[in-house]
Image 1 (cartoon, rainbow, N blue to C red):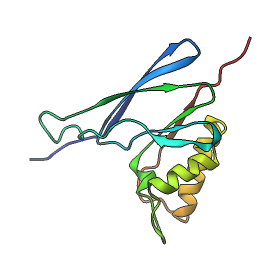
Image 2: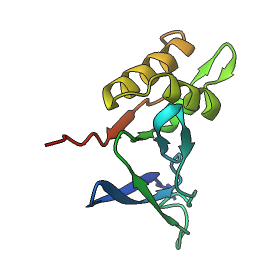
Image 3: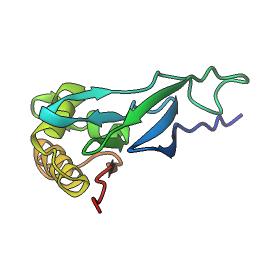
Image 4: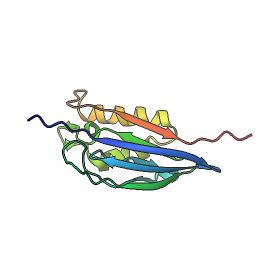
Length: 140
C-alpha cells in the first residue's frame, strides 16, 4: 500500500476595526512567523499532525491579531531544512533573517529567499517557498 500524505497551513483572516483577527491551523507544516515592530519575530500556531497518514489527525486552531505594520510569514520546510556547510538553516536563522528583512512583505520574502539560498551556496535540495502578508493601512 502506498501511503499518501501532505502538510498544510490554513490561515483565516477577518478585518476587525484597525486590525485583522486571524486563526491559524497547521497539519504537519512549519508554524508561521509573526513579524512585528522593532524586529520582534515569533512563531504562531500549534503543531498538528500531517494529513493522510493518520485516520483522525489532531489539529489545533490558534487565534492571533495582525496590527498595522505587522507581517505574517508562511514558508515550506525547504527553508528551515535547507542544508549548507554549517548544517541546517533552521528556525533561529529564519527568525534572524525575518528580523533583518522586516519592513515590507516584499523585503521579507526577497530577503529570506536570498539568505536561505546563499546558505545553501545556491544549490537548493528541497522546495523553498516563502509567502509574506503585511497589514499596511492607508490613512485617509
